[in-house]
Image 1: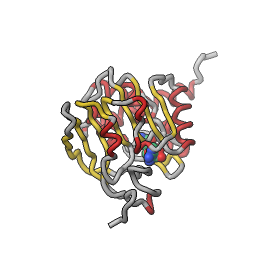
Image 2: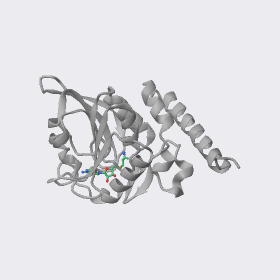
Image 3: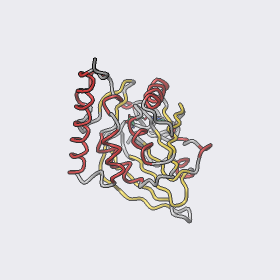
Image 4: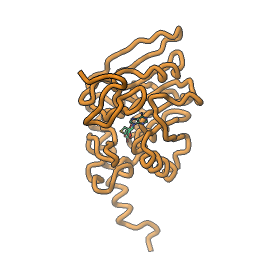
Length: 239
Ligand code: SAH
């Protein structure tokens, strides 16, 4: 008897090929220039981070529903965001919006530890379980309003926000190291600009615009006050 079920082996080979094809597509878009990031995209099984019903679309370059009205981030936007962080192996990273845990897994391949915050308990629990099952140990996931950051473990070398905010939440800047980088989609709920904010050693910041993106809203004290349809900047009216 074969030790590996041939159907399982075929599916695993198929997924590995699909991952390579997606990585090649992202490379053709000028992404995944860092060989470590390329290796992460070729190894993390994105199809396990989405509901079975969407599995056949796992290696397309699109966001897909993960329940609770949320989506797994489009692979090109994961690649863009993570690349902008320019992580060193010893880095400590804060991620806001764990969601499925897919980007958390990619980050975990590139740095020493990922601290990830998610406001929806079922998503946090699902992500934590899957990351554990995949043997990814250098992550901590907590249910919390990530617009406050996670002060206990800061300051961070990199902070990445996987949900769109009306503007850069001040607590996140405070928790960034001098010389660190923050990547965040900022702007109205429909379409945003992906911003790279550098914190200079003297504490000042410099912001670069990395292009248009579309993310689900950051819902919280320093984000929007409500879910997508009714999203408004906290404490303000929509113009
Ligand atoms: N990178 C994740 C993105 C999921 S979508 C993935 O690819 O699966 C963005 C996530 O941010 C959602 O799960 C949403 O619940 C979460 N989110 C929104 N506002 C948040 C907040 N204030 N704090 C923590 N998580 C938040």
